[in-house]
Amino acid sequence: MSLGLLYVDKKLIYDLSFKEIQDFVILSGFKRYCADQIWSFLYRRKVKSFFDMHNLPNQLIQLLEEKYHFKALEYVLHHKSADKTTKFLFSLKDKHLIEVVLMYQYYGISICVTTQVGCNIGCSFCASGQLSKKRNLTSGEIVCQILEAERISKQKVKHVVVMGIGEPFDNFDHLKKFLFVINNNKGISIGARHITVSTSGIVPKILSFSKLGIQVNLAISLHAADDTIRSKLMRINNVYGVEKLINAVREYVKVTNRRVTFEYIMIDGVNDSIESALSLVNLIKDIKSYVNLIPYNQVIEAPYKRSKIENMNKFYDILKKNKIQVTLRKEMGHDINAACGQLRSQHSKNINL
Ligand code: SAH
Ligand code: SF4
Picture 1 (cartoon, helix red, strand yellow):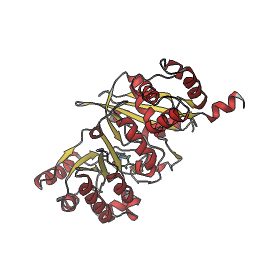
Picture 2: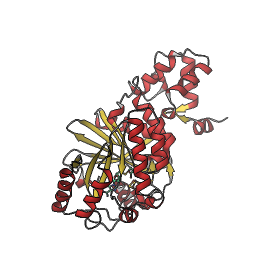
Picture 3: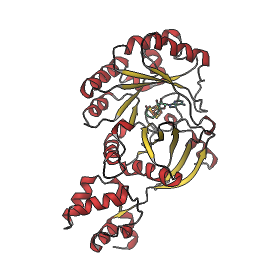
Picture 4: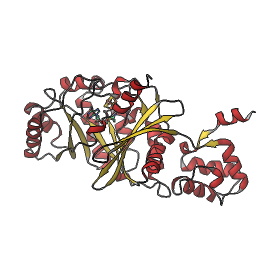
């Protein structure tokens, strides 16, 4: 076999779970503890070559070098906003572009990762929804978004939100593997409670997620409490309507005993009326939950406008008065188009992709 072919056949080392590395090490005739060493080199010391894994046996280094590689993402550009929010554009091996956002919160640095190239859910307000899904990202490609953003920014990520491009529950197996890799306390070690996964509401996967046995937070992109408005915004509502979605959320809360977050983007004249606020109260008042009101970020791909500030405040007040836990989210990175899909779509236009 030629060297070229060998390289093509190599797999991304970050795609392996700890157990898969352990199996590889043992089946290749080496001691089990070598897997701990490899894991630590990858995720603690963050080396970028097997030849830097100094205390491994030489034959194991050679074997790893023959079978695996490190290169998932290539840095393309980044934009930094006045509030330090930084948006990175990376290129995958097959040249697809993905976005990653780093946010400087008062409680530490938070990263927003991408799970798919494009998204098939096709929400009418979302820039990513206008790009049909090209492919799922592998778990390693998602993990590397954290490693690369940390390397470039020289910052340590403390919180992870799975809210970049794509529907994470439409890429469930890789998402699951990613969560276990970053949560592993011998490696990146991000506490499960510091991780949030956001979904448009794929009901069967909400039920699978509740049984994962990991304390990761769940956020539901609700955006409307009644079927007519929600179906207009999110065509997935025609498959899993509000009632089915809420029943799945109730089941999630029952199984995990965890609070769920409802995300609600505020769109002028669409979902921001007093009636919409009251129907939201009615829908969720007995669910252990928390509402995140998000000012809509206008995108050229969609016809919607952000709600007027007085309407957002009225909406907020109605929820508060009705004892719903709610925040009106401070917007970050507005000047760098931090809404999901925006940077990628602009860059693609510039370079005619
Ligand atoms: N697909 C998942 C996760 C990615 S989208 C989901 O839909 O939940 C992450 C969040 O960004 C979702 O709540 C989505 O509704 C929101 N979002 C998408 N486009 C937006 C925009 N232009 N302005 C504000 N929020 C937006
Ligand atoms: Fe996909 Fe989420 Fe955008 Fe909807 S909001 S199109 S599910 S990325």
